Image: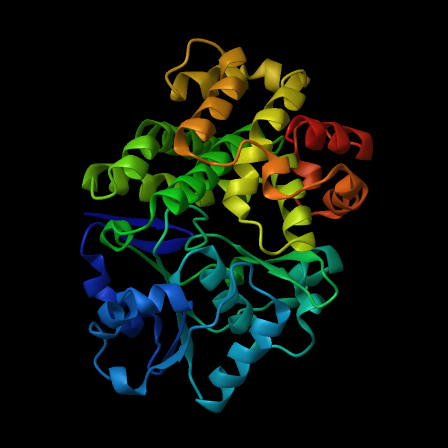
Length: 379
């Protein structure tokens, strides 16, 4: 078992969900509210979580987290939190539940609408240490939101925005691969490619954070080597262990910054909230890698070749085709067209991508025309 201190405290191993009560005691949560979704609750994971708590009958539960968390869902969960006079949150689920819990943690202790705290609205400076404590228990291996400093939410006006702050990072992450063993194959694949995208994109980012790059490359090695086994052999414990590690490492790294893949995924996810974020990332990643490969910073650090090395490939030119082939082997969509995206949407998607907080940390700054070209290649 590893105890890792990197921004937050991480408990990582099979069975560590048993440490939940001690983590509540450590961070000072006496009356927790669980934020989850109906699917996670239906498969019995919430029962496992409640069984670890001393006063389970007093725990509040919000289980209506949508696939892409919204401002409306934040209001609904916040109402339950305030009425129950809870003093902290336990997020159980994928990135959606964790991001929603983070938004509730901010809104419960600050005044103003959710958009007031969006990074693109200057909200980073408005989030303070008063933010309610969050303990995150991931049930997928994808977003890594359990160690992330941000939450992505769709505002009432349709924009998908980031709520970013060091105070948004969960106080504790309980990463138990046991909770992912029954994750369906397609969701395993989509969330796994999300983790792989985080590792690739943060490594390519133009920002300087060399420790983050090392973590990203190791996470990429773990994810790339084990995603097929985890997808096709769901109860392979070794594969599940490495996928959860890849997910956590990707998020530990993306404080360095992401790029055009996420700018596009955030924009399109705001336009059509039914589209899965990890699947979108998988669709965009090959074209963005090809777009980035001519940038001087990529060439100087031989970044594409280093990605290839982590993936067991011989040269950087093989990276984008290998990702496309992996998407196909995992049973993911053949492209954006198969997900219902049409060319008449390109203008609005590109406009949203240009305004996204990830846009400026891509190694090669994209224009609206560049985004349209990436979209076309990803169809």
